[in-house]
Length: 363
Ligand code: UD1
Image (cartoon, rainbow, N blue to C red):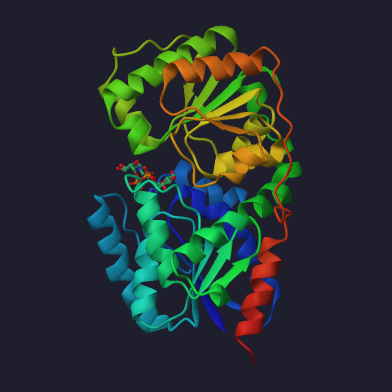
């Protein structure tokens, strides 16, 4: 059987890599890697192919940036052509980006079964474009592969047939565990002039935090204060870079707040593993810090990954600068939280998915 595996944006690459590695070990499973081109920069895409040893995409749709409708529409039109030429037996989408939504929509209408890896996550916040992408994708998917028990509860509440739900664990952690040792060889910590355990790592790119100058300036003010206690390393997403450039002067950037280019996968894992604190609005980083045991302060009002709070190292502070300062100070003053690794975040998720796929597509 032939599975088309879709990648589009940065957080997709580390989720697709374990699947491709596992599928290629199994003679019955053929893969077709499709890159939509939603992310296209060297440091948002290319470097991940190298670090994660991903094969060259079989098909590149080259859609690039645009409004939500433009980006989603372009992927849909291009992917429809791929389906009619390649006739895949299964379409595998991961995560919640616009490419995930676009390809599941086209696949479902072409009557090709869709498998969604990381199904059932809900922030219950429809102002997040990803929430819409997640909900629509799940409704259309024949296979909903979930990372945690509450994802199943969410899907059942939305009327998803339980026979379509498979609790397989967290695929992103497959990559994290597989590449941890290799990431350790990265020299990024030394190159940045910081010491292991002696810096704070920041990532921000959510529209709600970085698209409005007033909100962004307040967050930057809180980060500048944190940087007065410990150096802050901030790899800047292209979306956030635009705001930093347009709002120059609206906030101070002390020397100990180091703004750098986005990092590749191995460098980022190394930087995360040795950080004293991670401050982020990313989804996946809440999960990776939970497994690594690094305190994570999430600059969001809600999370679709509550297990990282219940069991892990994560705490939500919203975009409130006072809360960011307070939580960072608490951790720097020595507060520690007990944490555990959630069930099935064990590096074997791709294996479980491949087993299920083989079972459902008998020879
Ligand atoms: C997307 C995903 C988000 C994910 C994030 C990870 C959606 C709705 N959002 O958000 O869930 O967490 O990726 O990075 O799919 N840009 C570049 N170079 C690139 C990619 C983007 O310069 O390689 C710029 C573009 O000008 C664009 C902006 O960044 O306007 C935002 O890119 P886009 O793909 O629209 O969404 P992200 O904010 O990256």
